[in-house]
Image (cartoon, rainbow, N blue to C red; front, top):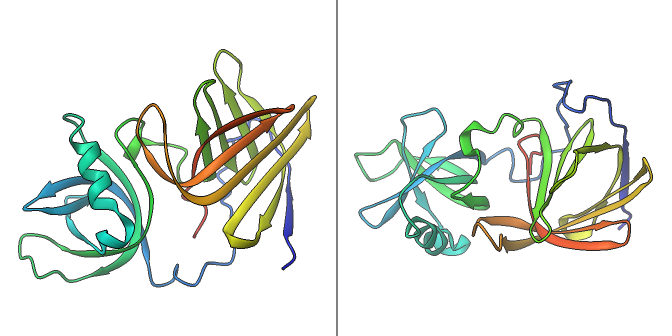
Length: 223
């Protein structure tokens, strides 16, 4: 299988445009819905209340994704909402006190910390990756990528994307005296400090230094 390459150039400021990345949807995208919201436990079942809504959906197929165990562990850490980013099929539920059922096909992330429903960049981001010790994050949009590191100014860069077999991604950039590579692969990943669960593992190589972390697809990537 040949990798496909896409060259994207950064326009500064990086997020001045609202242009959205588009690609050919995956096979399950047409039938499944991606929802973000807050998870809670009720009568031994997980319920999702989507962002800015009052509807509630029972989570089904939790055994295949492991979401019940992971959500229970995060909810046990203390009070406060548990943010979830999920994909699945909506259908009617046998429970009369809810608005339906969400049969899961993918768990993008579960997290207690962070902006959650109030993230202003989620809908226009393609990928977000981050790691700890040292702290770093990369936010990717159709306009370029932004690298954030502890104690340093954000760095905006253009990048080349290589789409690899098995849904893996490689982003590279050589600009402003920086040599950057970001690798992302489908693999359950847990943030070492926050305990957040994400669906991609990530590796950042910056000028020869290797840093590892987790990643998830943003709202502008439809898979």
